Amino acid sequence: MINFYIGKPNNPINAESLDAAFIGLPIIFEMIQSPDLFGEKKTYRIVGVESDDVLRQEFFKTFPEVDRVVHDVIVVFDKILAPEKKKLDPRITITETKPVKAPTEAFNPFSLGNAFASGDKKKAWMVFQELIAHDDEMEKTHGLVWWKLKDMIQKGSGFSKLQLEVMARNLVATYHESRLGGLGMKERLELFFLTLPEIKK
Image 1 (cartoon, rainbow, N blue to C red):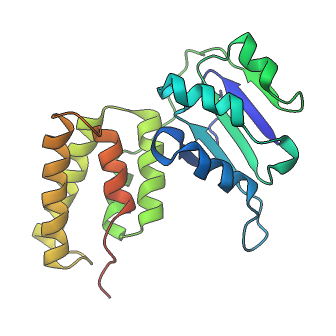
Image 2 (image 1 turned 45 degrees about the vertical axis):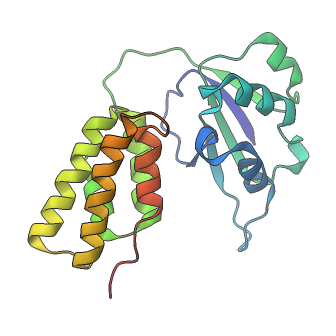
């Protein structure tokens, strides 16, 4: 199943999020076309295609044929232009949703701190993706992670003292360097979670 959503889906999507701006289209296309080692059919949500015009054009020009995609794929756009629709396989479902004024789904932002403290890279990254879907204010998210790290330093954690010191330096660098241009804070925080050190046994 391949579904393109125009606008934010009304129901939450339980899927592994793939950011095209961060990961790159070639890797994403390879992932959605490659069978899982254990034969599991996964669900991927592709985001970030609209972050760059060149990336968007490349996406519509090179999106794989439907028959070559082995997993369920959901792509989220703010809008799709008529010429772009013409380039898509007619078997791709396009669902347009209109914004609904309703209370936002309850999400506990502190679950990111708990996932981070657990040392589970994948879990921390997935909770980070869920958090930015609810609140994309990166300085607030950075502050939450910094608060949790200080708490871990004071009370102890599964990480070694050296690992905690290195992570603290990385977080400080993330804050200051994101203000100097280049990689933004969102991308730097994502990289922070993807490169968490192995927790000591």
